[in-house]
Amino acid sequence: MYAAVGLSYNDSKKSLIHSRLAPRIQKLGLSGFAEYVGILEDESEAAEFQMAVDLLTTNETYFFREPKHYDLLQQELPNFPDKAALKVWSAASSFGDEAYSTAMLLSDLQVSGRIGPNWSIVATDISHRVLLSAKEAVFPEDRLRAVTPDRLRRYCLRGEGESAGQVMMQDKIRSRVQFGQLNLCKPFGGLGPFDVIFLRNVLIYFDPPTKVDVVDRVLELLKPGGLFFLGTAEGRVPCKTPLQTVIPGAFRKVG
Ligand SMILES: C[S@@+](CC[C@H](N)C(=O)[O-])C[C@H]1O[C@@H](n2cnc3c(N)ncnc32)[C@H](O)[C@@H]1O
Image: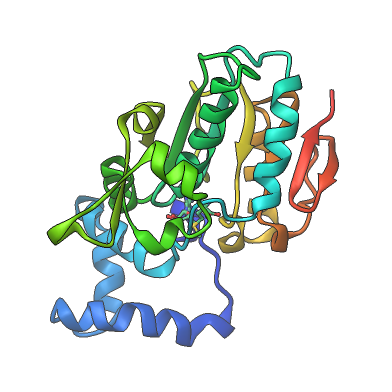
């Protein structure tokens, strides 16, 4: 898991790993962990490998998580040199809540003429399962608790009957976000450069050297002066790329 996707666990996490994987091992009718590891090491068992990654990581996310980050974007983006065609990357997007929240914000800025119309958002994650769901763009209502009633009305469709309690993104938001699978721990090419990058709440799985390596490689794709977001609780990563702290969890690339 460490070599393939950077997941790093010390001995204190043994019981956590046990509680996450034991039910799966039982469901598959295997003799125990050794047999399961054998399956994970078998390259023809990619689907089971994905399943194990999903069980070991959490995909928790919700719309407008860390509202101050979105306030900062609203304030800063109209001053960006490339405001006619802003490019954003949600680099561990989970179900897409972060990307669609940003799409609502950019759409508002466009409608009020503060940025140009050619903005786009790329959202990536390692998990095939969350990406499938993200593309469908249907969410339990509760995850949109921080979306204003006005935005709900303009950008979302509320489910009725069997779909009651669910909310779907309208096409004008959905069509702006392009989802793709990407493992942050492997080289990634052909992306960017971006004006804004979110890398929130994913570094938690990585050990310190992997954190620095991932952050530096991600920051290569950020334009000088661009904004970079981590989860506020994650602190500052000691990366080599020069960054200036703007507010907790938000940094500007110096250059
Ligand atoms: C807690 S979610 C963060 C979602 C969102 N960024 C937020 O802050 O609300 C963490 C995500 O990181 C993804 N992830 C874990 N390891 C990864 C890796 N090596 N490459 C890409 N994504 C990874 C997981 O699949 C999960 O969806």
